[in-house]
Image (cartoon, rainbow, N blue to C red; front, side):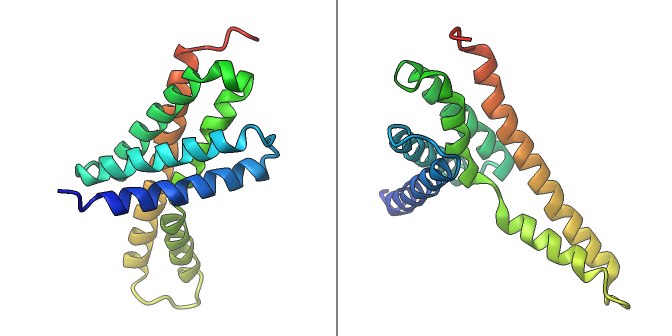
Length: 155
């Protein structure tokens, strides 16, 4: 019954580390970095939970982005107007880099003078890039919907 716990904790730990790293990269203040880490942990745990329930990557990413955006919006009092940026930093670790890499390598393989199985390579690369596009779209929509519904009145 508790077999999933180490995997969830692993996802939470590395999601937190990656999101805090993006917070540093985006030049967030020291006060916001723990919130970035918490948002990253939450996002990866929700997405992992969705995938454990046999949801697609895109569906699980959409749910994780919505939950993360709602959670961060609830903390608007502590985070101020930067709450949407914290939610974004928390969701960036969900970007499917492996699929994007496979798509790029497939498209680069097609530039060879005489590619072997060019149609199969193209179809595989196209499938991977479509998954990347849909996952990014799901993440963007999941971040934007709560942000628009729970607009910040400080502006």
